[in-house]
Image: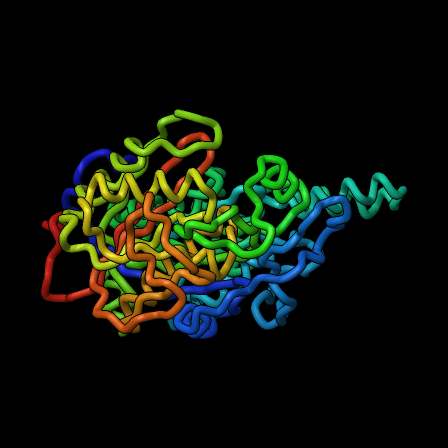
Length: 419
């Protein structure tokens, strides 16, 4: 599935349901209210042993009623990230008013992006082995560990048989990769619907890796701030239901946004550092694919990790495309942390909520904008705005870049890719 050229022909693809599991809210209604309120979900990590680290703050998801959202699969057969994924998918279907029976009668695609897969289960396996736990416990955790379960479990939970299910392992851009795959499948008619997004759980391996790289903040994540000192690891899931315009209109579905297009590239410039020109090329690919001009974009939901290199590089790439006066550029990782494979999926949901509810979420924890970034990050307080078009950014280690363009749905306006 390529995004190297303009979309030609095909169906219009609408986002009609969203499910969010995050440190600031469970479910799309709570998530939207938290975004509008600039709420931060930062707290001490208790999910794994943090002794030996000087600081260990992050964005952990509080317990919620999983039985409310997961009906068919016994919870002890699901790892933590898969639980998030399945719960968010159920939320998305309920939010969309879509019947599971209706999905079973159609062709579908399920794509879930991730960074660590079931890294939390691997943590537990290591701890069990070190402390002489029973072999039966190791075996149970091993069955939960494969990353493929993040997507396959959705098909299992809803008893979907005519479906392609795959997990996208492109790290922190994986949610956007999954969204692009779902867009292509529905647009081309290969699938009648797509359940897409990303999921990850906090795990010691991931936290320790970022900590050793010197990328973890000692306090709060402050994207684009002159005093920023790193990211905070987080967890959660964002799953969206995509369907064709015909399908959505036929069942009277509410529409959050239309997916207009996307762009992907991989520069392999550096294992961990983003490359400015490559990011700018990816943005242009997405705009071209969507048939959108830079002046038509009202909001950029940035990757915005709060690290020194990422924020400056991303801001400079944005200015390459948009000039010295880009639209507002927000960093919701200031509120939800870096949720890894879920990051750009939750960011896409935030963009869709901005379109539907007419507001721009803030970049929280902000003090002073770094002059080297030179953007309006909407500091600390949401603003009311008529948001029509959103650019959603996702960058990952290894130079994996993905950008998705969402827009307000207007039945009477055809985008550049329509027949």
